[in-house]
Each structure stands twice: as C-alpha cells, then as structure tokens.
Length: 294
Image (tube, rainbow, N blue to C red):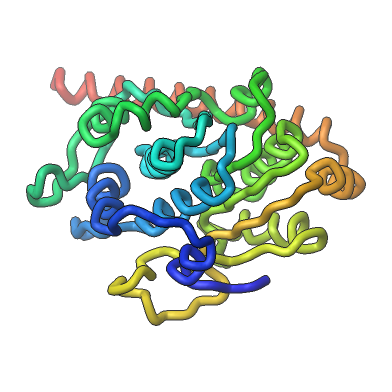
C-alpha cells in the first residue's frame, strides 16, 4: 500500500483549499482533545483538510459517515460542498443526539482551552455556516439499527470512523457497500497496529488490499509545522480506497463469508450493548443520587 503525507496528497488532488488557519479554528471548537494530565492538543485536525479535499475532488452526492463525534468531519465535508456548489447530503450516524450535552474540550473566541458540557447543535450554530448545517442529516443510534432502516439514495462516498473494533469496522464497511452506487470512495480513519486501530488494519488487509489499490495517508499533526511533520510511521494513518465497480468488490468479499448471519449477529450484539449502556447510566444516576442524599 502506498504511503503518502497528507499535504502531498492534498496537493496531488489539485483542489484549492481554504486557509489552514480556518481549519485549525474550526478544529479548536469541534476536535480539540485533552490528555489525562489536563493538557490540550490538536488531534488530527488534518483529517478535516483531507475530507474537504476529497469531497471537492470527487463531488459526491450522498456521503455516509459513521461516527459524527463532535462534528469536525461532517462540517468540513459540508464546507467543501458549499464552496464547490455540490448539491449533496452528508448522512452522519452517532449514538449521541445532536442536542445532548457532552464533555467538550474547546477553545472559543481566542480564550484559553477549557472543558465544557455542550451539544453539537449548540456549537455548530456558533461556528458553522447555515449552508453547511443544511447539508448534514444527523442520524441518532448505533450503526446496525440505523442502517437496517436506511432507505435513502445510493452512497458514493463514505467516512468510516465509528466503532474501532474489527467487528464494528467490518459491519460499517459491508453495510456501506450494500448501500452504495456503482462508484464509491471510502476513507477509513485510525489505521494502526495499536489497539485503537488494529480493527481497521485487519479489515484493510483482508478485504481491501486483495482486490483494490489503496493509499495510506499520514495525517495526525503532520501538516507543515506539525509536531509529527517529519516523522514517518508507515503503519499509521487514514486509508483511502475507491472503485468503479462496487458490486464486483462486494461479490468477492461475500465469497469469503456469509453476510446475513454476520449482520444478524451484529445487531443482536448491538442490542446487548444498548442494554448495558442503559443499565450503566441508571447505576451512575442512582449512585449520584445516594451521594447527594448523604
């Protein structure tokens, strides 16, 4: 698999991108992270530049994103659609509602970084353009249950950044192909031999590279001036792959294992996971109530 630095690949795509400082500013509001020691860092803001450039280049009509998070990727893709006059929609899936307040590291209006409790829509209304937000269709739920009832136009671009375990990545990949048009481009986040990326690495090795050429784009803090600009890690990055014959790709993969039992089993696992989450939330609420009462 070819390995390329993010700036080199964006240059290769040949599209004009906005000022890098604008991506950093948007990232400070929607992608900032905090370490265990309390220090803040800009975590892979470069993915937004890459997504913007890929959308501008390939001009997709229907984008499917697994893992909205705080929305940096969604906003960057919608930004590209707006700038290049692309009449498209980004369907983005997350188990957290756009109106639910979550723990949110942020730098706002030049202030010092802090951790607040904010919702996506609260922040998006503040930092996003209306023409961006209007291009985003937020879908709440786990990917299996959401995609079971997905009945929209064929997908021609996907960003897979949801669950990072192998089973979750495989589900999101297979269900993308099952809902894609003839031509599809897929960007996988978090390709690595570390625990957080080994699911993607395993999938790419089994079901991408045997059939198609792919590129490993090294992104995280590797733009000009980034702390990792000159560090080469051939096994870490984001993987881009595209095909003009998704049906053939799907047939080749289905010859290796049966989709129906896998998808059924995955949805059963999701139901179990959903019950665990509700139970955990109930227990935390009960403990909090008891502490306040004592």
